[in-house]
Image 1 (cartoon, rainbow, N blue to C red):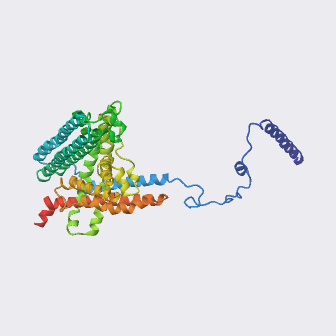
Image 2 (cartoon, helix red, strand yellow):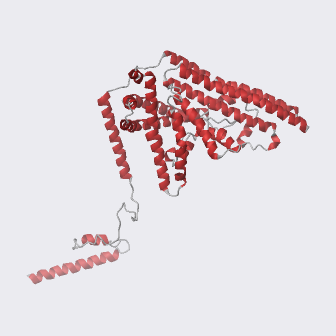
Image 3 (cartoon, one colour):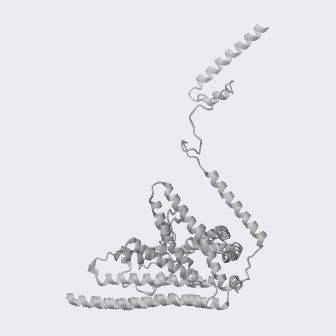
Length: 498
């Protein structure tokens, strides 16, 4: 029996082997050979696999062949950030309850009336600038129309024009100065509410900058018009509306509403208005404005109020803790405000005006120095300062550093006016915005070499210095100091001192 069974088994195995061999031979062209991994899986020696057969490095080691992806850590950081902020939201509601009150307001009727009148009257200074330029353009056309032939007569006309320009410049200076000075006086002494005052002061500063650009640009265009053979090298885009055809009410009205501070007779224009685009941008602006209001009322106000006594006694440790706590809220409010203004509102306005150049900012969040940040985050102001302050000063022989100092001084004064006047704490009382701007000059000097370093390390360090100095320390500390100055003048601190 054993021999018979063995014979049957042997015959069966031999038949199977022949069958498998025939099948493998037939399908040799189509079936791939089994891999070494499958051989290991079907091997009867399962505990002898050589898993450590090659030289390999840990994924986080510098010697690793492939840099691993950190997408999971990014997801973790986002989740941790969400969880931490949810905890703060819950803690805030447990501690303070709902602080938002739609019906509550602390502005006076006088503030609303004066603010509305002031806001409506400020653009009148632009039309006064138009009247001044119209008179100067008429004089220039008369000079060209006379077509004097002798060099002596031409020189006499040029001297007369230069004398006329002095009067034109004086009128422009008086007009722009009265615009800004009158608004600042009314806001500082007659409008108590800082929000209403900020809107009026911001509008006046914008119109002042537009007035300056309108006067400076038309002055150069007028000189080019009177000296056509001097090769003024005007941009080709200006050929569509040469001087003095640009001195019209419609041209000025477009510049008044256009989202730019730099005057040009001609701007790049889009073909049509996309009203759906306008509606989306306005919805974003309204939504973000509500978010800013909610965050300010529910989260920023309690932190600021709880910081007053710490600042009054100069408790440094508590002040640092308040700054760190306020930094998260102020950063979110600032980012929301940036998106609401530069991405939503200005794009909506540009679409309505068919304004083609919409580079209102670049990737300022990647700035490797404070200088790069100021060149990229607010392009309208940067282009104004470069065109009408920095470049003319350098052209007159100033060094780039001295011209930059002048730009930052002017910018610091305007920032202080925008913040200090509506809060009734101008230079000498608080002056945080002015000195904060001027303090950035040494930081710019410090971070500029980092921007030029080869490799990513210098740029990373510069970017971290920017975020820490500007957003994590500068903004919340400035908010604390201005709030304390306001309370010292009108609120609880003044009552405590009595």
